[in-house]
Length: 125
Image (cartoon, rainbow, N blue to C red):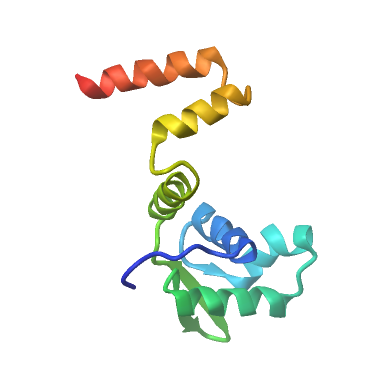
């Protein structure tokens, strides 16, 4: 897979379950953890998993009668991609613009800024 592409919400929900479990993961495990909550049928989960295989997010192996799935893209890599894309798309590739927007909309508190400043100072050392 050359580049990571944005996942639709339903596929991202599947990936969150895949990432939260030790590989391999099966359709049954996903159904137990997500299917009932989302009221998805097994075929829906299977279809979403097949899309994730095609997109290069998971690989699959058949073990007996059941398929097992293994993550290829890590949660960290995907979140890094999403965050970078979001900042580029909505904040002119400026972290300062993002923080300003959050602060002006009261979504970020002064204590959050203090914590961020402390983190920045630690990274500079």
